[in-house]
Length: 107
Image (tube, rainbow, N blue to C red; front, side):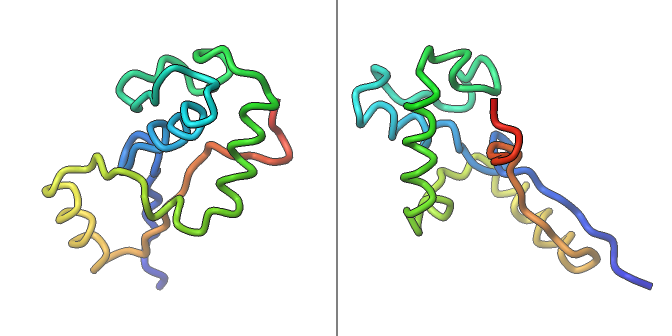
């Protein structure tokens, strides 16, 4: 029998993707400041931050070549959350994912 698989979402659950993504927009002068996930109003940045598709695509292009981007995200999970995940790894396979990028379905 195969071990169960547990899928953990990164964005807004384990780490603050919004802060890192919007920091890149702020660094390029597209928005006034980075926005943490706790302040993010909608899933799509273009809807809440009033940026263009070109701005958003430019950040994705940077992320694609930034080897440390995903490892540098600020952790928002608590120590108890991390301990529980480590315990869960004993009984299940863990998969970490994000639903942020869908190259075939981006609108």
